[in-house]
Length: 229
Image 1 (spheres, rainbow, N blue to C red):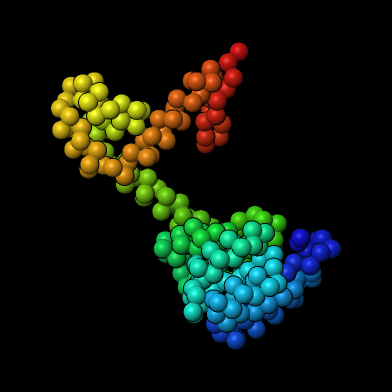
Image 2 (spheres, rainbow, N blue to C red):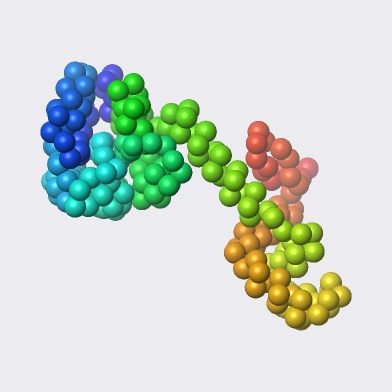
């Protein structure tokens, strides 16, 4: 619970440097109802102390020795589902953001952001809400749009071929429908194998509302089925 509740928010700090841990502890324990229940100087110690103390939020340095912050995050989230992880890293490059998020972290700060946003991040994570600064959110959005653009670099013919296969047609059936050779179909599939799962999901999503007997109606930035009258 947060500051307004009666329960204590239990925290773990993991960083290689004594001075950094002391500074973080001073910042955190200045808040009412926040208690640092454990400190760790390396990744192995962080995992063991997290299991022992079961903190609500673990504040983990990405660059921990012995076991790095990403693997520490994966181990904590795998063993303690109620413990949230806040990672802090040297910068907000795509690789440094993506790895801990895939491992289960729900908060990310750069080292320079810690002093300004640490308390706000912990308040959010303590009630199981993710926390990212505007800068990190912008970096995540840019990464998403770049990958989406790269996945969409298909010619109109290639997209039709892949869509047809994604909808369940065999190579021979697709060739007959599109009036091309089976060899052409196989060539397109070989060049763009990574696009097939995406197109299969798109195909299922497009068919699902029709099978339910509804129509598509806009809702904010997404589309949801609307029951027919």
